Image (cartoon, rainbow, N blue to C red; front, side, top):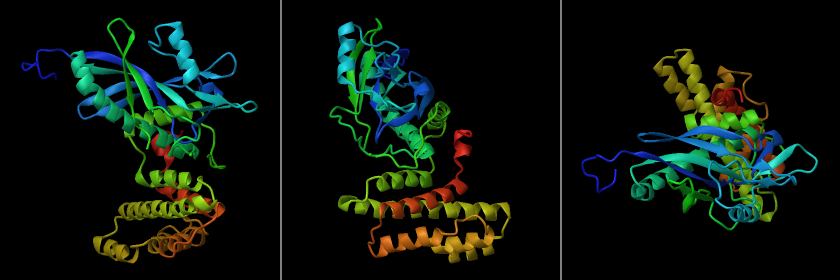
Length: 346
């Protein structure tokens, strides 16, 4: 509500805004049939939500990626040419049916009673809420496909993370705006995102927000492991092991609690089990008792022992050792928080 409307008589209108946002990390690796597609979701806020459309870049005539289908777009051919020459939307592979998407388009309508309220209030709110949605979407995509969508991009970019335009009453772009959203190499275990994967991640971002904390830790651990095993990457690999173990410990707690709930275990026994399982090793022992075939047989060697040495002795590991720890932790987290239950089998 604008300050100069004390009686609340002004009626809110919908103001279009569209623009493009950078994809963090090494970009979304998608199948070519995902290009040029649009995906609808919701950006939620305290009093409701906005409709949001995310558009992937299109495949141009010369096998280059160009802007997605705009709802409004540049007003003149010269502006369109300038956009194509200055914005790097991604790249396609020459042999595989893949593409790397470095930027996505977005479109939303913001409620505001006039352009003053739009500029002073509505845009700031949307900026904050879109930031949360974008982190949620890229987190789900990173977890689902084991792609690195955490750190700064590997490809060169010196501008703002997000650019956009408010649309005036004549359907023309006006009021150029920018935003800061982002806070890096692909894992060999990653896979290419399919069309249904993108649809599932967009839906989850709108309906559920961020993934559960253990999955976010797995996402971060993979990103740290991907930083490499040279001298400067050794600390990242150590942190990858620690984060993976923390994710597994949180997931084990969930698995134990769920078993006890399902079995209607009495409180005295719950407390006794809690006292005996206040660390990763203790939780492993309890789960081996409750669900003998659940945990990986090398969990102690490849995860727990490594975490203890990384935490207490500052020990560093090779990329292969860190990756093995992350893989084992991922299996534990999947047992407690199956991705299919959040992504509809995606």
